[in-house]
Image 1 (tube, rainbow, N blue to C red):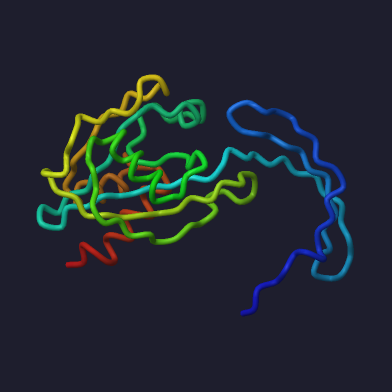
Image 2: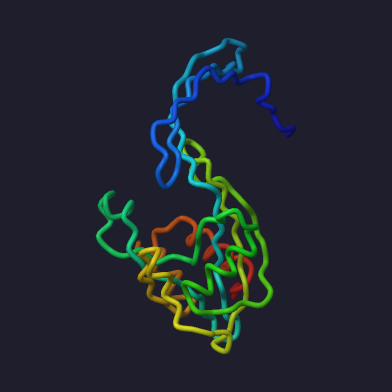
Amino acid sequence: MPARTLQDRVRIREAALLSDNWGKLTRYRFDLRRSDGQWQEQTREVYDRGHGAVLLAYDLERRHVLLTRQFRLPAFVAGHQEEMIEAPAGLLDKLDPETRIRAEVEEETGYRLGKVERLFAPFMSPGSVTEQVTFFIAPYSPDDRVSNGGGLEEEGEDIEVLDLAFDEAFAMVRDGRICDGKTILLLYYLALTVFRD
């Protein structure tokens, strides 16, 4: 199926900056030409905090994965009463995705990785957030650990490193203990490609 371009179907009428703190929240008023040819005026708020990257490290020999556990305020205010278990991730901060995710994994887990594999770069919540996340996987072993990890205190991070059996991590998806979308995607990817039985 050919891609449909939006260049001649969207006319931005107004962009009003509502907040410019950690990210930017902008209200857009625009016209969208619908598939029947009619123009419709719409208003939407868009949050822009930059792009990100995420990586799930796996140990094929031991059948383990490397995850983190930390407090996430948005999940808490949405009613989630436990710390989030997730793959290391972070904003790019004007770096390329691979460079940034290598540094993020080392900061959060204490592991320095060798070769990493880029998978895909989806928009995770395109209805309201501009962020595009680049997904990676990489092999690791206990010998790759160079520090305790834990994140950066000056950034408010207090991260626990989890070196878990893959089957246990996958069970945690099924019972709801792992509910981070990025991590679930990566665990399923490993189930389909790396840890096939």
